[in-house]
Length: 327
Image 1: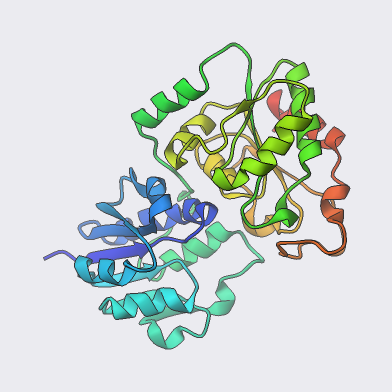
Image 2: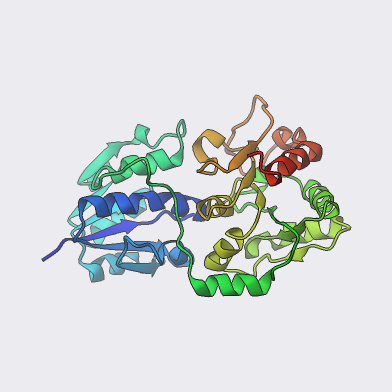
């Protein structure tokens, strides 16, 4: 009888996309095993069509333990670093539990990596590759990837029909907090400048981004396509696969776009691009160096100097260079 392995996904979109590098590493070491993914229900589409996975199970905190029990898994690789994630796998009866020994959960893990190895001094993909080494064979060619479904492509085309003008998507929100968001009036000015140059511009985001997207639309004289809250992850990925550029804060959609091959201009303020820059070759990090960044705060108490100094002129100039192919 083949082994049954479960990978417990991270809880945030960006982390889930980056963690897709774990799956080929596990499959490489266990070619005949059943490999399932347990993921928050809103993130199922990230893993849904992975060629390495048998089944993706959508979970909530309430039914996670039962999902482990139903799966009767032999081992679990845990991407979340919380105590609760390890506790629920333990309660779910998984005999072998693996992960970083963070949050005082080392005694709950059968195999672990030191907490210090979950480092912010290197890219998160490198952290996930090391996590995969606990029960897999990671390789440098393992990169974040989200496989698209034809239905998502069809829906994306219906929402943003084809045209002659190159496409630029703008993601002005960030779920973590306002310290990660460049200012709505500057996004609006950028969108206007791009529209004047003949680019088709669309605003994207989730339901929680509607307020900031509305602020951008109100401040922009040019007509903008508003796709905020109108797509799931799969359709949003299909939209990103067809754009010439995404301009975005440090967000989950930033990583989704990069995993779909879109060029990304990533605006960083309170967070660390060494740790979470878009993974790939077709990106630029746009930030201004200030002594207090990265602070990792949700709310800035001193005026968000990191974004105050990031001008519309600079972002527009670098966006044009990327659109002209000078990545």
